[in-house]
Image 1 (tube, rainbow, N blue to C red):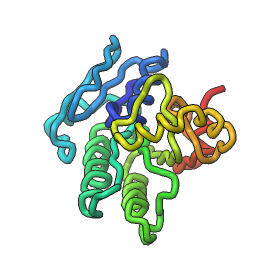
Image 2: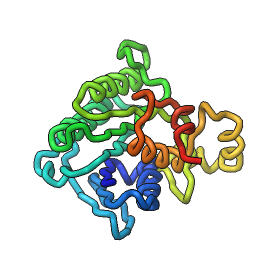
Image 3: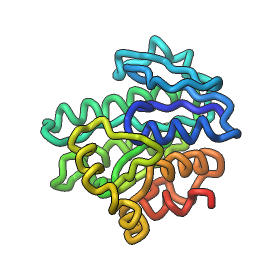
Length: 221
C-alpha cells in the first residue's frame, strides 16, 4: 500500500505516520505539509509545500497512491468562522479535489471530530464547518471515510503542538489510562487512530462516518 499523509507534524498526524512506518504492508509513505516532520525512514518521503490551498504545482507527485490520511487541522478557539472555514474547509477540499482527479476512487480518510454537525445548521461554528467539509468529501469521486475522534490521548512520546493541550495532558497524564478504559465511547489514542486508518484503508468499513466506538472496534486485536 502506498499512502499520503497531510498534517503529519500534528498530534494525530504523528501517530498516523508512526503506524504507517511500522506497518509492513505499507511500502511507501509520502507526507505533505509546510514543514518537514523530522522523521527518517527508508520508505518515507516528505513534500514541503507552502500553499495548502493550491496543489497544482505538485499534482503529479500525488498520483499513484492507494490511500490518503488527511490529519491537517486547527483548533477553532479564538478564530472567526471565515478564517476557520478557510483552513478546515478550504485546505481540505483543495487536497481532496486534486486527489480525486489524479487518484479517482482512492481511499480518503478525513480526521473530523465528535459532535460534527452533518446538517450544517447547528449553533456550533466548528461543527457546522466540519459538517460541510464532510458532506462535500462524501460527494467527491473518492472512497471517503470520516473519522470523528473525541478526546485524543497521545502515546509513544507524541506531543500536541498546542500549548494549552500540552499543559492539560501533563496535568491529566496519570488519569488518562483509566479514562481510556472507563469511557470507551469518548477516548481514543493516537495509536488506535493510526491503526484504524490502516485497517479501513485495506478492508473498508460498513459506514462512511466512524465515531469513537467504530474507530476502536476496527483496530486489529
